[in-house]
Image (cartoon, rainbow over all chains, first blue to last red; front, side):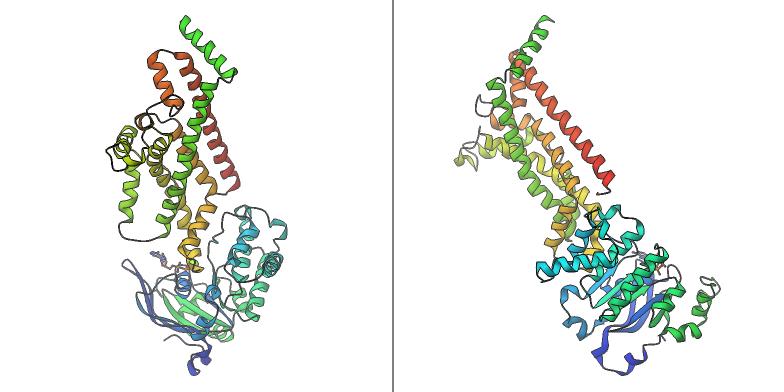
Length: 256
Length: 235
Ligand SMILES: Nc1ncnc2c1ncn2[C@@H]1O[C@H](COP(=O)(O)OP(=O)(O)OP(=O)(O)O)[C@@H](O)[C@H]1O
Ligand SMILES: [Mg+2]
């Protein structure tokens, strides 16, 4: 039922990073993800949308390998495995997890297992601090940063290793417009340098700005997975249309 | 009452004149307890962190056991160590009974469970928060342990101080295995017990004042650290 990326359907495994086949996730007695199938290409930006509690964060956790599906299969493409194991994936959580260390030390932490010279390390740290506009807060305890600054730090830390796959869970939810713009620029740069980005957002305009493809989830199912223009022109399902019209969640539509 | 005020007078005199015997006792107390705390922290912290990071069956039982051991009566620990170290005991050949080493062993056994249980509490909270981040980085257990211990450093210092407080004020176990031998295994608590029973209150009082001083400064240090932590949002 879910639309796959047109290209993904036809081509071989090469341009597929991760593939979901009939993935189902149950926690206790609750079935939270229902029989999802889709594949994620190696490049571009996917924006995941859907109402609260739809299962977006769970979908991202499954992608990250933080949760195992109760049924179905998640396969990682050759491309993903070839990439340096340590750095093939970074995730920024809905509530950013920052170490009880300075801003700078948080970024340094992500680099610790990278096999690079001291010189390179210092350079990466200072450029990451620069991109996130946190130079002046470098030595402050990360937990003293404001909510928005913490988000920027978490993102900078995730991006500094140049991961193959970058998973972002509502990273701009608590940001002011200027910070949002900084973050969107950071995301663009990552994508342009070959990182696959999967981002969750509730902001329709942001989705239009960022996305190549939209993946729409509702009640643990994928209702649309298609190029951004197509999605906003004709979302292709009642549920997605209702969501865009601000009429979801709606109990009448709930169980189809 | 005259006796008592006389005793106080002599006690202060002993303190003010840096009486050799008095300071010998204090130095040994500090040495024994500091070494014991250092060893206990090493094992206790590692135990706490490992219990957070590794998942295995029976973990809950180990946690329960550690918590139960925390309440061990010191004299029982002393008795056990005595039995182990006494001439006919399994470790008798080392001739450790009535040495500072024996007292260190007893104190380590007493406070390691305390330090393990308290550090588990501190680290567990933090690990819950860090867990997914760790897993998203595919960190090794050792890397996780290192991170947890470093990030909980302030909380763990408090735990260490609590352990030191227990060690330095403990009397039952060290009395049994140390024997309170003059110039050899006499420490503050055992000396206070002995001198009081002998009726020589001055030395007991002087030591009591010092011991009280330690305990007050320990508590002050803990309070200071606590408030520093909450100010800093560092734990
Ligand atoms: N560990 C869990 N145990 C039980 N239920 C869970 C668990 N994690 C998530 N859920 C449930 O799964 C559903 C989907 O959660 P998820 O966090 O994926 O939502 P979401 O789409 O990210 O929503 P939001 O937009 O509010 O962040 C929710 O109803 C939530 O209560
Ligand atoms: Mg979510």
